[in-house]
Image 1 (spheres, rainbow, N blue to C red):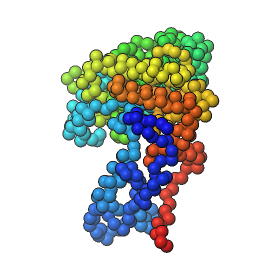
Image 2 (image 1 turned 135 degrees about the horizontal axis):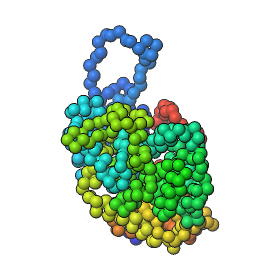
Image 3 (image 1 turned 90 degrees about the horizontal axis):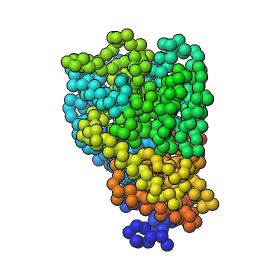
Image 4 (image 1 turned 135 degrees about the vertical axis):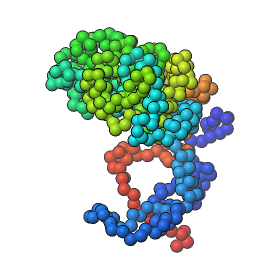
Length: 522
């Protein structure tokens, strides 16, 4: 028998639904929810629509010939459907969200309040520039702080997300190389094995060839390895710092020196900037370009909140190649540059408009409410939380790079699970039964069976203690050979474990009409 943390007996069996099935499929407050097409009716609508008068269609061969077949609902039905779906989702407002590399941090409600102010929430990208000087001032103010925190002279605000920012920075590097007349010779980008997975994809997307650089036994990059790979064929290096193993690249300045000596550029993936804000300025380390994920560092919503934002800071060498549009602060007048003004050679326009106003206002609110000391403390607390988890689990779970301090995330491998009959995936699925979203698993790829945990600075010590106690209980159960607790997990989630391999190889992409329900008496 296994006891839960309240001291009451609990059993990891098939669940009460197998012993006491219900007619509806509901399990008390866990409501079974069908698709809209399965519960709606095509002959009704929750809105009264006036009959359309006769008209001459202009669609030609594209005119619809069959009923559209969209389901209709009464307002309570529609409301309940989406509320029930939201109850099946897990978010940072639900509980600790330990996804490593993703930085699932709390979004302060003050940020949301400011973003909903009429002057920000109602702004439209096609308004005349003369009607939005305040919005441009906000963008310029945020840009100033981003440059201050990174020690970089320029920033492009238009990228819509981290990978979009990577694209922007690498396109600026490509434009700078072309301006030097080396566009046909410098075709290679170096990417360490500890980099984020989007880095090689971004480089390949714009025509570069990617060469991998191995990491040392301690999980960091050796400048000697970089120097050996450099040459007149190399355009840039894309390095994540702190890297995806949760470690700070202590030789980053030496790497920057050898890269610049070879005539190449240094792109730094800023996805983990949350670990060093207020502690280190990337510009001081020799970085030429770095994107900043506002959702990971400055608490804007992480998905589900509309378009994101991934500003890119640029060095003096790359500043002239920043894309349009950008804000020009002439002290008295704040305006938006749409054409070459002072001899710049931008690579063009990355996106239709300047950026995502809601994300800008949220990020600036976070900065102003925390101040320089508050942002520095957030970084320190994020690192402290990760090391607290690492040290608290070190006697049960194995660390691939030894007992060394980490930065914002703690990385474990599956060495400790050998001969237990439990895999990394099994362990992650069992966490769902305990009410936790699993950590990032099987990434980074340089670690076998990786388990990457990032608690962020959002969590209290009490929250961390409960999370640690839960993982210790699961780890001890795995070591005791209680494989049933893991092999079929999750047992208590709305859906049991799926065949993920089959779902990837044989996806069902088309909805089909379900069979009608037959009465048991028939």
